[in-house]
Amino acid sequence: MFPASNNPVRSLTWASHLVGATLLALFVWGSVKLVFEPLRIEREQLEVRAEQLQTMFQKSSGVERQRRQLQQELQDLQRTILKTQGRLSEPLSDQQHDQLLREAAAEAGLEELSLDFRPPEKTATHGQGVVEFAGSGSYASICQFLAAAAQLPRVTKVAELHITSDLESPRNRLHGRFIWYFEVESNDKEENRGVR
View 1 (tube, rainbow, N blue to C red):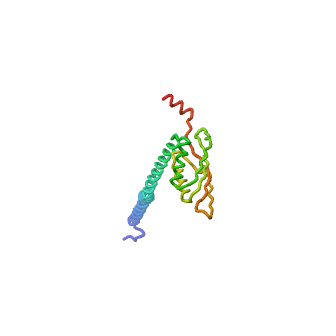
View 2: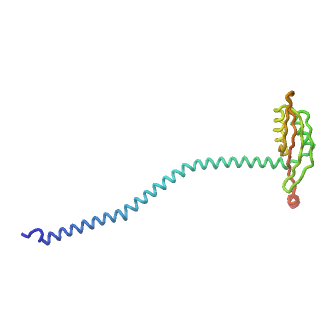
View 3: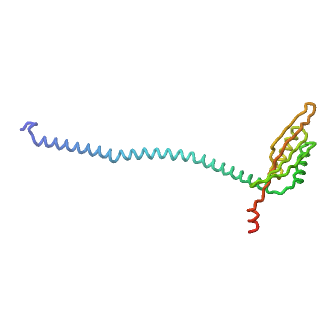
């Protein structure tokens, strides 16, 4: 027989096995690079996206709760605006305002109330008047009077307030200034009323 190194059929068989193994290795490597590697990358991207969606889902309930809370605050503010606008447009004479302030002082236990209404001033958007006041009472009665004044039909703000106490008396002296606001009828509003 022929020695192994000289056998062409055997060399050809080994060569064909080597070529087949190489082709198989190239096929496996190509499958991994062209099929499995993109699938692995896509899986990792989907996992990241799933985590992002889970985080967004968890935050969305908080965002919805915050939106409902802000919506409620907005509705409360709109009611307050409507109430304030109603107070601005409510007609009230100085005599009526004087009477309401005196009633509030009497209910609060404030004594010796003096009120001095100054002539109101008008701007393009609103009007405002000044009322200087003085009186005496306990600290609680002063607080109750100021709280009642804030609830009057006219929008009223305390612009200046001085409280002095006397150690020999339980009564405190009160002196201050209210600014009250009212709606000014503009020419545009009057013209529009005539057109309607």
